[in-house]
Image (cartoon, rainbow, N blue to C red; front, top):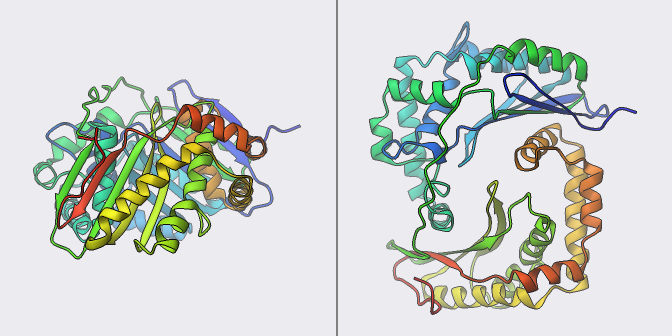
Length: 414
């Protein structure tokens, strides 16, 4: 019987894993390289994003325009991005075009041109993205929250700093690429209609000569204050709250994530119901679970008018604290129905599955099957989640506010 998820580690340290989904006509891939923003030099914040953008400005035998044209001719829906931990590349296409697409990405990841004439256009794109954050106060508040929850360097925004982006040189780009874009620690996840022996041989041919190298670990953590206010003239105030949770690899992850699902995830969830619907305090409120490899957190947001911001903060903190009292059976039923729906929809998306198995490999060193995920969700109970909450109650909050005036905060937060 064929294994639902197969994997192979090449001699250079590259990990390849695949989940064959014969019911689909598509195939998708997700590549995670250990080249995230946490490793940016202290005076070059945003360099990881700069390099990621430069890699798709020409590679191998293709200039920038030919690269885009060839990917479009294959019907590849692509994306690139940078998180604290990784630079990521993804693509989805018809199954018959998977290996030709990977041939192009072998050039992107190993043989980019880094044309000097593209340096300034890339710089301007990144500076425009950075300026756009100032026009999105909710995003600005949440980026600042993550920075304070995780500290330096793991909370560092991938968008970087304007002065640092202005200073990036061709030598910086090349040095970062040569150091960080290496096969050891890199993960390629593939899902969809794939022939595993053919895929493994193709990836070995395309990436097998990629040379591994040691790269420096990110700098040691530097904690930041748990209270931050950003002055901004506005009729609205952005309220961002975070607290520590367990990482994805922790045995209690599903209990922790389930508790967050009761807080946020639909119009019946507690934050939406209590803060927005019943009291009309804010126009938006939610909570999300976020994880690094060894640390996790819950990140919450509420946007309110300035005159109701203090009450919004107080009520939201009250709901977070009240979560420790436990969840109810009807909340658990809604949570399971929502999670199961998401799992079913993942089965119909090669992109979702390629991303999920690559993420699993990074966190767990293996990939969970959909049946295993479903069993773990089925095993959730009020008792298991409430036991977790009793031992890990939401507390020690980090609070970031953005608006015309600072808000009063609970005693003990500074």
